[in-house]
Length: 115
Image (tube, rainbow, N blue to C red):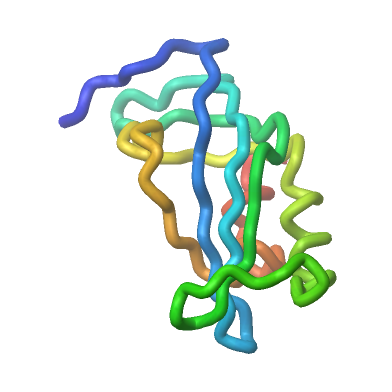
C-alpha cells in the first residue's frame, strides 16, 4: 500500500492523456484539489480546478499547432473543470495517466460518478 502524500484541501497537478479517433493524443494538465481520501482503496477524490496546460500530438509524438487541434475534444477537456474523480495516490507524482476516450466523452462515468 502506498501512503497518501497529501491531505484534504491540498492541490497538485495531474496529467491526463487520451487518444482520439484520428490517432492524435491529447495531453491535459489540471490543478486538482483533494476533496476527500479513500484510504481503503489508496485513492484521492479530487476536483479539477483549472486547466493549466495542454497540447495535442500526432501518433508519433510531434506537437501539433493549435489550429490543428480537435475543437470537439478540447471542448470536452474544458468541460472537465469542476468535475470530480477518484485517482490513485500515485497520480500525484506527475506521470501521465492514460485514460480511455470514453472517460472524456462521458460514455464512461469516470468524471461524473460523484455528481
